[in-house]
Length: 310
Length: 250
Image 1: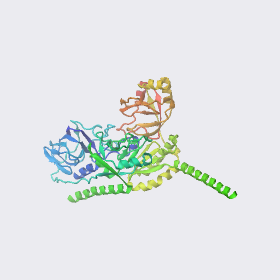
Image 2 (image 1 turned 90 degrees about the vertical axis):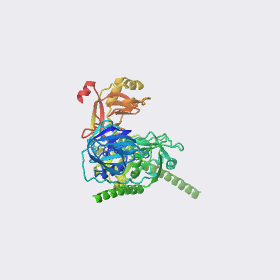
Image 3 (image 1 turned 30 degrees about the vertical axis):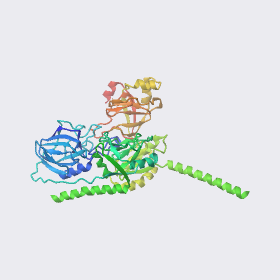
């Protein structure tokens, strides 16, 4: 068991999210930085989809009521076990009655904590991910609060070997696949979009990252019949501030799209903090597929390296 | 002069032909849905420009197309929206295949083969805004109840929140602009009218629609094997009942 002493800004149970229910209005949810989740899980020989904790900003404290192994990935939120610093990208042994504290970081927003065997809350609609808007999944459909008890299995391994893995490289410019609505919005808006450095708004959350810019105007008056949207869709509301939809976003929407963030770059939005600057470039479908392939290659290398280590 | 006049005639003829050609192309274009790759693993099939005045007949084909694609097993999700279908592939390798196949499939499918369920939604017409909707439309509250419950509505698609159905078919006499001040909480089970649409709220949520009634029918329950009562393409009607009837029926 893990006992939540302090949840911090937002602490939730996530996995790779729900698929197959979007036509019923059910969002994907799940870890916003799935690669951080997968790498953390692999470091302790878990399944990729085992449920992890998503820690937002930090200021979180967890007490382990049993022994286990953990791995940390994502943002460096200055974590420590009983006061001794631990670092993202590494696995650690935790004994019963030890406490993990997250302070707060200088870069990045979300850390992922994997626990040996995963967090064992009930599977709902094929996933343990917390749907914070619809209030189901995770632990009673809610962000975790002080006093919550999270079920995990005890794990004692006298042969524990610490392992580490690097995160995939980050991009300075986010790659986007073309908008289906260029004919409506016009090339001017697409050009302005590409040539603008946007600032991440304080109004961002797990549903989407809102972007602002004081210089160029992207305002418009178009409204469209609703279409299916998904994490990565970049909506442009009439006020001209684009929104990059993330995992908790609605399944349909009526704003024109500026394009779709390619799958290989979307995880970076998990880590943008308010005030961070974001720039985009359009790439082809082939580039998007290649980038995804490269990222899968990074994870495959990790798998092979871990296998050879045993 | 004969030569001149014949040239003139040919010119006119050509321009008529060109005009006909343009009209034909336009007609032809408007009959073809557009297909976009949204990413290397998702497609948007958009038929919203085909017959904007007959969304229901186009939507019936959209549901049938979604069902056809589902049978293939190639997709993780197929999301109908307003006269469009967004398709999410399991394997990005199949993008080209479906880019080629979808338009042909669209031309071949018959919407009559689509199977759907009809739902009767027991409704207590006691909503806070029932009187306002009646007053706005110069009707009595009985009229509002009669008109609202006499229609068979089509579920165009779901979105906004799990189990929230966008219904087609609200009688023009009940169209009412949204509230100027949205409520911070519209209770679960509220039956509401917003502009030219009517809907049932599957869960508590903020909202600007007029509440005309209440149902105890569960639209979405994550603990059930089939969590969502209503599917895209289903039909439903509201059955007026008293509070006690609604609860005993459930």
